[in-house]
Image 1 (spheres, rainbow, N blue to C red):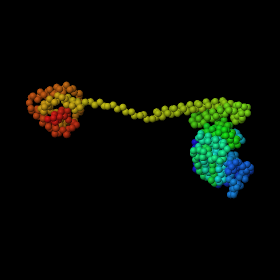
Image 2 (image 1 turned 45 degrees about the vertical axis):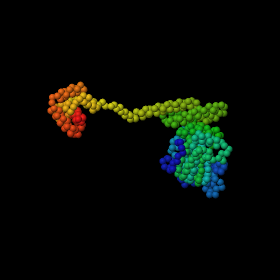
Image 3 (image 1 turned 60 degrees about the vertical axis):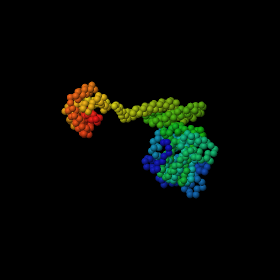
Image 4 (image 1 turned 30 degrees about the vertical axis):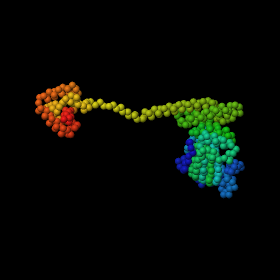
Length: 467
């Protein structure tokens, strides 16, 4: 929960709210007309003492109001009216009052901040504030509308807020003008909003509105909750406007977290573990600050639950439990990274080597050509210098499709064949004329056997071209 969010319709929130047409008269009867209620004068932002719910209902339903007034702090837990209301399930599941505070202490002693009924008249305004103790808020509009002005609780904005809230000119300065960004959120009947820890906000009421809301601490923003409490300490916020039993509920949270971590180190998320570590350190510092005098030690002891005999030992135990849990979480992260690497498909690496092409060598004549070069000895040959009288010379024009088994020939053999061809030249012209005719026939039909001609045939073609 890092930012405020709005759920437009209540379906899916698993909550139970009063009827949207309920009146303030109905609420006064449900909680008791004689019940005291704190009323705020909007113009001065001052509290008006002496009001009862009966008086407030009469004022609210009177169309001729003398001043603009507002009620924002009617806590209704334990009343007939409040018992018919069920908060959103997400709130019930994480609220420390439900999860950390001992059930045997309820309903007599516990922080009564879980359920409020807010009744604002048209043009009511609540100036910028942070809900006490850094508590989060759920906010459901039964009827009417609201406009929220939000400022993010950055370190810079919180420093400005602390300075503004301590200034004597606070009432004359609109805090939204003091920061870089201020967001407006419009809510209407049926909307439900969750306000996370520490968000600075002001509220304007454009029309009469009745709202059900509540505050809660939780384990997802512990560090910021404690930071807001420290701001309240430095600005001397009166106890009346503070979260009740604040330190005690934090001690109960520490006790519960220590027990949970001892049972299961992985029960908390990494974010919760970091918050719990901040809680342990904050409690340790608070112990150290209140050891100076006997009065301080007595006050500190009143904030520590009686079930905690040795608070220092608890903090040490919690710190060790957190360390083990964080170490285990780190190991799981490392294991998951290793398994992720193993699951990745192996890279296809192709190592291509140039294929060694063997030289063409023919078994039929033993002559080998290298890069189409003709041996220098061929230059001494004339048109009639070779006499090939083998029968396969004629068949070379249309070579049979036989197996291409080739053997390696030597250049020495080429020379011996050349000497044989020269000696045949001296025998007469019949062989050479026959060779010429065969060469001409070969030239005329060379286009038919471009790929399948023998080496001998290719030599004849070159000799003919020269002459």
